[in-house]
Image (tube, rainbow over all chains, first blue to last red; front, side):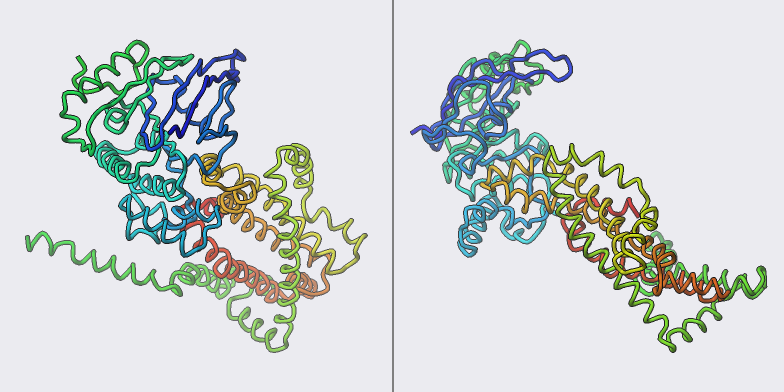
Amino acid sequence: MTALEINGLSKDYVDTYTGEEITAIGEVSFTVGRGEFVSILGPSGCGKTTVLNIIAGFVKQTAGTVKVGGRVVDGPGPDRGVVFQSHALFPWKTVLGNAAFGLRMKRVPPKQREATAREYLELVGLGGFEHKYPHELSGGMQQRLGVARVLANEPDVMLMDEPFASIDAQTRRKLQEDLTRVFELRRPTVFFVTHDIDEAVFLSDRVVVLSKRPSIVREIVTIDLPRPRTWRETTQLPEFRHIANRITELLSGGAEDVIPAIDAD
Amino acid sequence: MDITTRAPVRPKRVFAIRRRLFANPVVRVLGPFVPVVLLWWLLAELKVFPGAFFVGPDTVVGEFVELMRKGVLPGYLSDSLTRLMYGVGFGLLIGLPLGFAIAMSFWARRLTWPLLLFFQAIADIAWLPIVIVWFGFSLTAVTFVIVYTIVFPLVLGIVAGVEQVPHELIRAARSLGAGRLRVFLEVIVPGALPSLASGIRTGLGYGWRALVAAEIIVGTSGVGFMMFDARRVGDVAEVFLGMIVLGVLWYATDALVLAPFERATVERWGLVRQAEAGK
């Protein structure tokens, strides 16, 4: 079952200073299966985030289609929940209010939406924080809430835009592990944008590797590592290093901004 | 260990006393006025200025008691406050929808912005001559001027506030299933609130000043009228009293209405309290 189908996506834009036309995305096609975790990696400025913004419906593509569950989508919708790098939580709503926001928009009755929201808060490790406000949480906890807010809405696909990029390294490891745990437990469909090769390999079932601008899909790498995954064990597997090194090679050449895998040889 | 911990005990206790003193709301509010009143009293007692021009606190207090007893001050006060309430009420009624309409629509902003800047430049009191021609020496004339002064800072505050709402919050709401109206009510209005609150604060401050000015010119009653009338008969104590009443009322409005509103919203949500900057 295909949850997300991207076909011949391209994006041109006009640089507002120079007035020249720039092709950000040349031609990108890939699919994400139901319950699959797919990451997209590419050199800086290759338009990974633009791909996500087009899928989310925030930005209009120049050509190509985005299908969710077989339907062509146009504009943002609750079938595609987004976890933002900046968290984008509602400061005036409590943790519970944030987590229940999507359900409220769907007019789910209060009792039921509170129960669902609490369940997902518990799942991401925010049980007991229901009545706090976002600014009272640490960056890592805020992003847990960002994930719970989307998952509670049960979208067809969860879009994650470098969600851990602004979080310190130690917390990031923990968040990556917890995201894996939640994914293995619930099997949501996830599309994940990152520039961190280890992160992509650790989390994903498949990784879409883009070329530099105008970007095309260079290769789609299948990550056949066993689940459940933990940072300590999974990253020690020879296959992990092997795949990470291969992706590093794919990206090398104009990929200064990608965090290379450790031990790349 | 013992020695090192004992040394800072005394300053710590001093800090604690000071902290407890300032924790007391009465001390916190009235404390700063003590030296001002003392200086005032001293200036009056030493007869630095002639008594006919400068009266001491005791005289003003006497005047206050007298005017309260005669019912003049309560009457004028309630006249002033009624006018202010009308002005603020209509000001909010016009300013809030107008502000959001201009902020939300690109074309509305394009079309009205030059007008806003033009009319904002005409000082509120500059309207009085024509307003008196139109409405006479009436409540309508005073209300008009107050509404006029409140609407502009409010509209400008709302436009600035709406622009400050992070784009990602709107995107987040849309991708959680919120339609245009929901985005407006759930994201844009609360997001614009810090700036809106500071617009109300500024507008109310201007409105209050405009009221006094209007009462001086148009007045047949009210605190502004009282002060100007007292000047005519040379009652300096009454002029002083009027000034103090104005200060106290503004302080009360701030402490009882504006500050609690901001504490319950902007501060609780951890948003930057932009209102503070406007103070």
